[in-house]
Length: 227
Image (cartoon, rainbow, N blue to C red):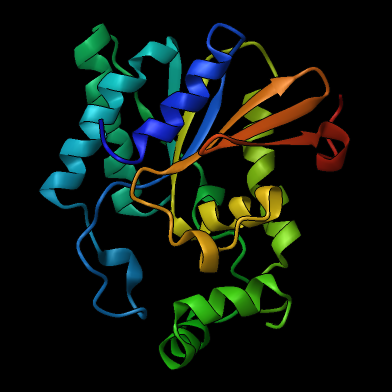
């Protein structure tokens, strides 16, 4: 079992048999990003593709599942390989669909400006300035708004007693949910691993989140959704 799968499976075991879940995970291992000016060009490594396939076989125990991914190729390829793993285990083909907001919907400003700022101060400091509200809102959504945007995806998938969902996204999206919902700062916890992520489940009028054994409860009315 990969290092990222152990805490995820712990969350799944805790809620087994109590309804569908929605997972939001970082893509599998990619090649290094050579420049923040073109971060979306980095593709999966062979190990990344293999790890995603293995995760799919492990996630087959979720039963009926749907796969979604950001517009970026490495997220699409992660979802496709997860689907191949599920198919090998169950014989069921699971197509992967794109959701734009699994990409970077929080970006409002010019990416060249953001990439230059990251080069100047480093990604850790950039994330801290963003999450602490130091960066202007015309450049990036505030932390809570960005988190609610991601939560709306999960809550929408859990609105009915339909299939579970696996959403493949990026490290920043996981960082957003970790800090907003669990108060887990990257300075203390480090960067999310590849294939690491958050599990969500609807319980009555709330969305319950689980990350590495930690739990958070988000009322649906906070998401402007009917309870």
